[in-house]
Image 1: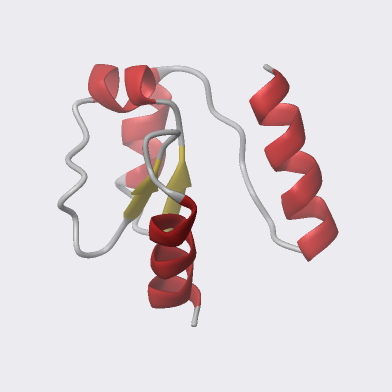
Image 2 (image 1 turned 135 degrees about the vertical axis):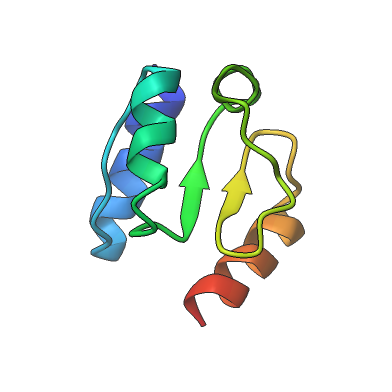
Length: 79
């Protein structure tokens, strides 16, 4: 919950639009639209939703990613 609030504040300050999802079923359905290119999630939600981190169209960022990995993924998907 704290991580979500912190990340929401950071994204608000950067002017990004985002959607907060909690259920694995909703997550998978929402991502299938192809409208999103970056996902910030905890490992458990990624596993429950059955998502692969090897997706060329979607960067999945979790707490196990280093600062450098996160910066690299954001630059790759957002320029």
